[in-house]
View (cartoon, rainbow, N blue to C red):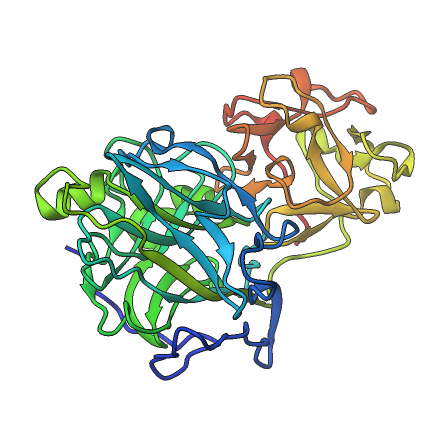
Amino acid sequence: MLVALIGQAPATATAATTTAATAPVAAAGPPPGWTTVFSDDFSGPAGARPSGANWTYDTGPGSNFGTGEIETMTDSTANVHLDGNGHLDITALGSGGSWTSGRIRTPSAVAGAPAGGKLEVTASIMQPAPAGGLGYWPAFWMLGPGQWPENGEIDIMEDVNARSQVAGTVHCGTSPGGVCNEGNGIGSGLRACPGCQSGYHDYAMVLDRTNTAAESITWYLDGAAYFTVTESQVGTAVWQQAFDHPLSVILDLAIGGGFPNGVCGCTTPTAATTSGATMSVASVAAYTTTGGGSGGGSAITGYGGLCLDDRAASTADYNPVQIYTCNGTPAQQWTVVQAGSTLHVLGKCLDVYAAGTANGTAVDLYTCNNTGSQVWIPRSDGSLYNPQSGKCLDDPGWSTTAGTQVQIWDCTGGANQKWALPA
């Protein structure tokens, strides 16, 4: 069993929130030293969809998600809509044993902690309060791009069976089992959350990378820390793959599944489970502090002492990225940005062509777009790992020929996949 560690309060720590259901709660601005990277206060007319710029829908049977939930997720405003008072409502509807509900996510991985800095992701939420709650599973969480669970999942708020409780959990490593105990993950377990079904409360997590050799994630309820997981608990390689990159933000209200079933020792929902309860979200925000070890404006060197190079210093999308004789030109002046994992040169990003995942897919330069194709995680063996494809940046055939375009390939640990980043 893990012991909760009390850490520094998050940037937006406040007293317990018990806001009336009709009062909107705007996403707070960043405190000094922090920058807003994402926010939504769900303003808009009653019955409207949430902002398409901020959110997209995951739809289809809950069985598709691998959690055992039984609802069908829809994009219907009957399940997901603004209430006109500054809240997003996600409502589960049951009829004759069939259920519908809603699940929305940011269209891309919008929030990551810079190397040497911190990330806080927070939301003001009122949990659903059905008369019969067996099977209700509200959640506010984050997911990294790529293959689960190595891509990383941070569950900031979960409750099941309308118990007015809260749990914080991480998922990482391999499944089943592994250092992260999958598919259960490493979690706080359900804890009391008084008033969480009658008012809005602040749920937050802080990913702390100020010491990149000893990183941590801490969970907060209304500004009070209640659980921490550290890098040392799972090991550096697993941690880097899971959390040293941007993640998407997700809000959903599931029905049934492994978590609620396991807690009650029964199969949910039951005939007594009440239709029509709502998870109401007043605001969501993500803030970061400036990283201290991101490096900038210098070469990335690879096999044979050659440098990673933007061919002909072009800024055209899909321009090849190659190995080339180190020459100190702007085409070789790379900076490590955004959670220590996005590589920029000449204002564009190192990118896997067309989001490919096959061995031999070319690597190019492309407009920075926060997608998994542009996430490169520096690993302890010197490789640059792309979690979306599950492959590493590779010098084809151990080439020392200037002008050879780089690619992705299965991670081998070979010298042709070792890259020295800017200091």
